Image (tube, rainbow, N blue to C red; front, side):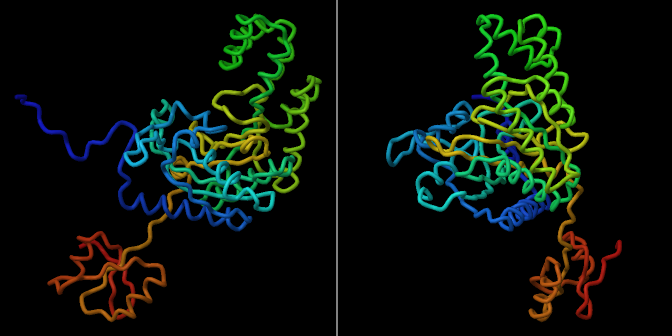
Length: 383
């Protein structure tokens, strides 16, 4: 026997939470606002399952999120299944299988929940909402720019008009290290120094690469300054291709949206595990959490693709508060047609199920903002 009290039924595992009124409705309306913009640009919505067999879910780009994937045994087939930790690998699977014969470029969008094994200090939630776009089968700066421009328009639709798009080249540093001739110890120390933005350690461990890497490290920030540093570095081989590609992508973005805030961090490579080219992280002014993330990757075995995933939970924390639909109390016996007309006008109608002594008091009790009087919505005053 034990004297321990039974657990509180409202207690949830770490990183999980209930979303209550009106926040759940606010999130749903924000997601639909994002999806409406995606659809307007020709991105067709797909809905992958929450669970898949492990061997397909974690194949190819899905392997990058294997350590964040919950696994369970399917009691029917006795095969291992995984709960998705990220939607992009599932969309890639759909594109290469069920939509393998669809015309390219293929534009797909999605919205749904993901579950991760663990959160981070900056993002502790383990259930994460995602809404994003994938542009599959085309490789060009214009394609890279399109996903960023569409995401910027979607953020604008939920009131975030000052988002910042931080462009990165996650394969640039690895390619330079591959060609550097540095020993394993110096290479590991240099990667760690770049990860920590430690210019002194970069100079200490970088060898012949140190001057170039230090210049690129210090150039992080406004896009123009970073592009000048990349051009001046005269980077070889793959790194040089990446430098020209990000320059062309910036030009394509500015041709369509010259006021969009763009920054570049040439040596950032943390957190990008399947991106192969120009990548992006989205931020809001004054906030450290990411609003979105994406970039170029390989879809299936060899098909070029790029995409951008937005995080509605983080977006709502950064965006101006969205007004919930006003709640209108409808007294018992009101004509249903009148109530229907009020819903068309934008009210959420809360109908009385029986006569009550005081309609106004009942309306306040049910958290209504308005009451129907003489066929009109009247604002409730304090009782």
